Length: 296
Image 1 (cartoon, one colour):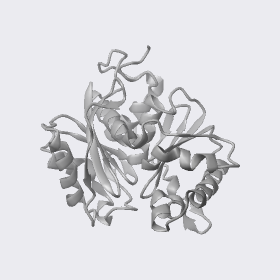
Image 2: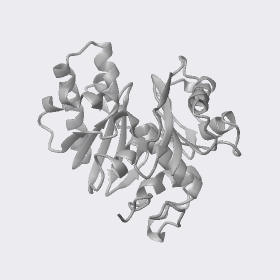
Image 3: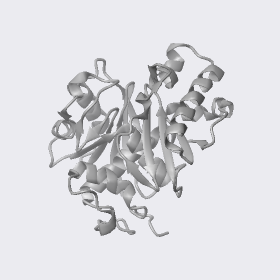
Image 4: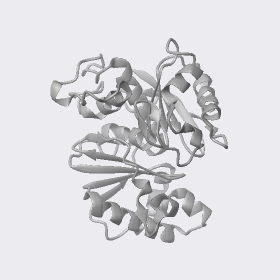
């Protein structure tokens, strides 16, 4: 089963068809630069360029670097403020040809990465509290308890020593201030210690593009009790997680063990107030057996 995923970031928009049986990109991803200013129309044009590169016409999942509820973007820390309060799912669906062509499911970018890591990557099979952090233009976070996602946690905006944490410990902060790996690792360490104090996770999964260089900074982090590991899907996690959410939205409920749509167990149903897009995001992780290789 292949579904298209797009990851909208502060510096780039990248996407590819995803093999949801394996949790891997089915083709080499295509990337374009995020426009500046990153207005909704300009970013939508970038998403269309990425999708059109593959000639894709089916469902699409797209991440967004901010709070997303039921397809509407509520915050815009690292993109144009025109996104605030926008029905992003409707905008992208229209830009990609309407509901008959490529219906789009939109979710928070770190939540998407977290879904992928919990299902296919470093968090697979882990219980308790797991926090996936994506270090890039900002700091994204995905918070899980016993495999269930708490959407839109946005822990990159915690205050740390009088600043938004992401202004001090993101990859962008490292680059802008030309910090050494050791100096930056110390900032990341202080941030992780702060998050650990608040949530007591068993596991931190560190994602984003910098996860490819985990050996340069993770060994320098001390004094944190939780296990700290690099993301296995690295910078492709958001694409995979976006595709997962799009598949859940298309099926209406998590798929059965053979990959066909199936109703979720009543005990795992989302609250009645949840909209269809929120149900899709929760479905992607709420059913731990909810993907084509389930039960194997």
